[in-house]
Length: 391
Ligand code: RFL
Ligand code: PHB
Image (tube, rainbow, N blue to C red):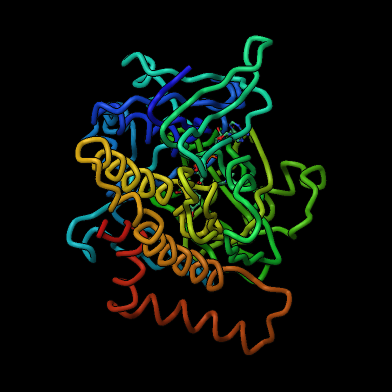
């Protein structure tokens, strides 16, 4: 097998990259460890920045997103039992976020790739990457009971945080920047119409809680829990009790409960490698960086990386120039670090830390209070949340 770009991983990064390359007349093949059903049902992110939505629509995969996505002009911050709306639309000159589940984006991209004759190898075993420091890069894997090799000009490592591409880069090349947080998120999908039309981020002395949604019928809710919490210690009624306590508000607002369809625990971590490339191997998305979910940036950063990477490959194949490829890491990292800063800030402001002194707690509430009362502070949150400009 031979192609121009060998892509490892059919998450949002790998699929969108393959789609954008196709639009520029560049061939790629995706090698994915899991089945199509698995990646199309994996519950993950739900918030798309304005720029991510525009990119999906402009590249022709936004039809269902436009029809079914929920456009939100604001979010609510809740503390001391009171809600404060941030009108992002007004503060950013007309930008919004769209609620559309990540696995729906994945479904749309898989179907677009297959309809255009694109090749995705699902359920590939023992995937490994070779020769990316030479002129003959290749991806090796097991499929249909045989060892296969995909020869390519370049490899795109889009295989997520636990993939094989990043660890294949020789020791000493990458510098890792890492921060773990002393908590995790317990997330549930519930069959209940969301109790608020917009997302509610709540700071509470029992810990952070988030009310989000997937559709007008399905709610997505999160609570801060200990870093090593076992999901078996969280029966559904205990989760609802905690959500009720942490989201409680003055007045007649009520959190409606419903059957929990799915639940899981997600660690919270900030991580970046520099550079995001070595030889002919380019890392994109979670393979190169992860953010704590509080800023809703992970999927959007993956999309931003592959936008840059597809432009760099397009320049190379049309003119032979490698300038954009050489600058890939540097270009991506400017945005990555701004998203890291924002995600860290949202996380620090909204969660309870065991080590917090009463001083820190008062300071946190003062920060929220300042934010809720200052147009300048709200504008800063809003422009980061809807997504910073591309350049
Ligand atoms: P993915 O989605 O992890 O895809 C990687 C793909 O590579 C495959 N793979 C391999 N394939 C072949 N060989 C191997 N050795 C392989 N190893 C792995 C995997 O099966 C998979 O298909 O990475 P990608 O494409 O970089 O996309 C990143 C996003 O998935 C991630 O950043 C977001 O989900 C993060 N995130 C959020 N991001 C947002 O922008 N907005 C949000 O609201 C948001 N909420 C979230 C989130 C992540 C969460 N979890 C569960 C981590 C909420 C949660 C709870
Ligand atoms: C989600 O709906 O899954 C979601 C929303 C906002 C976040 C993180 C996750 O900050």
